[in-house]
Image 1: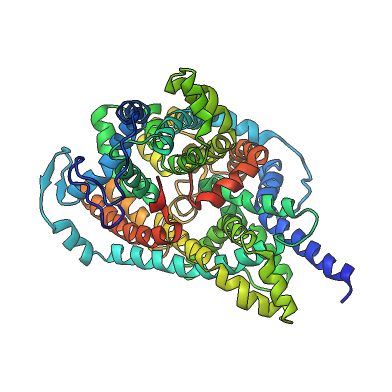
Image 2: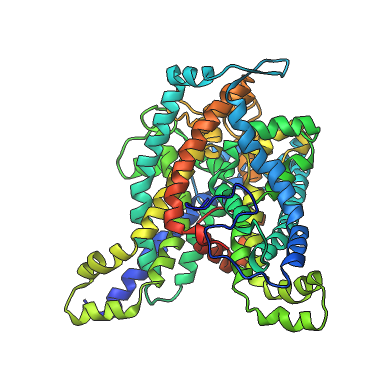
Length: 311
Length: 277
């Protein structure tokens, strides 16, 4: 909600400038309600309602009979002591740290390449987005096969080049990096599109001016392109963080959080708590933590996207 | 460096990029038409010695694969249609009408933009259980219809259309619904195409919620069925790479075709929102 506006009662004017009442206003309100009703009904029941209810459930205990009893902050106190939750938070952070720099560097370089005057650049654009549109769970299975220790094609090539085979998904040191590679591979094209949109928004005149000033290509990149792309870079950073917080599908089919707990993510721990151990209250507490992390991100993202300009 | 050499550089890079992004899919396709014995032979070969469809027939015979496909088509398709209908109506009101509380409604909707289903799926599950719709198509479709990206894209599109469009029609005495259906909707084909592809692909690919909401094997969607029966996680005694890869290939080909046809809109959708459908 934009700052400086209160919506306590529909009667008081918002902070925005008071509108002249149009003759249509009354009838427009009724018509608008009709247009909005079907969507708002579904939105409230299946999205807004559950999001708010989750906060209440996180203060409750859910027994196997399926009744809720209020227990205050107990779930959160338990979370603070829960080693598995700490590990899942830490792994989520590691996934972020491992995927973000390569994503920014590769996506930006790819966008710069595909922004050049060249034939077939559209082929490159389309092909690089393909990994993003494939079913993530399926992508996980395909990479499982490539990562296979004995028959996997990746180890075959590594041995051919004189290396020794890598325990991609079976060593706890490697597994998180292996999954990160899959995540990077999936998202490069998506982020490339964002950078490309940013590049195309930079006016040609700036480049011409810097050429006249005698700047070389590298200086132009450092002095013009990168500073102007900063909003896109922060957007990519935020989106990567959101994707890391949500990470589940690929991991479910690749490592299921293992070996040990080396690739356990927050959503996976949430899934295990709520839908395998049936601790709905405890699971909701994890959801609330995810929600808090995301709300902080939305604040950041709103600054970048300026969604408040809305209507 | 001569101009030609400089240019060939770019094309070499382009080829490398295409190889990197297409490699896993190509390798999966190649392996899916090999018999299992050849898949597990060393060294791996790009040209199958024996070409066979047996993995595909095995998938169809051993698993309720066609049911999964049907469930995926129905839930993703119907979900997308409902999103188009409900979101375009709501976005039209938000983009073109003046009424009290509009800003509030819009900010509440947009505030949910970045809150994924993972952050509210437990209450959603409990509610669907109360409503008695778990294990039905409704439990997959309805939550997906509460889509926010579509509102975001369509509202800004409708806002940008010139006022004169409907004024003439209004003077002629057309009703608001008729103006919307006969004047506005035909004009919004590009925005609707963007919403169609973003939401269809995200519905088709969704995994976690459908896995939670559906227990019945024959009601599962493709990603869930494939992951539970062919992923290595819950691998059963019958687990084989060949059948798993055949199942994977069949599941991603439809999205690839849809994507290739509508890729221009897909790219526009990403560029305009930066958020998944």
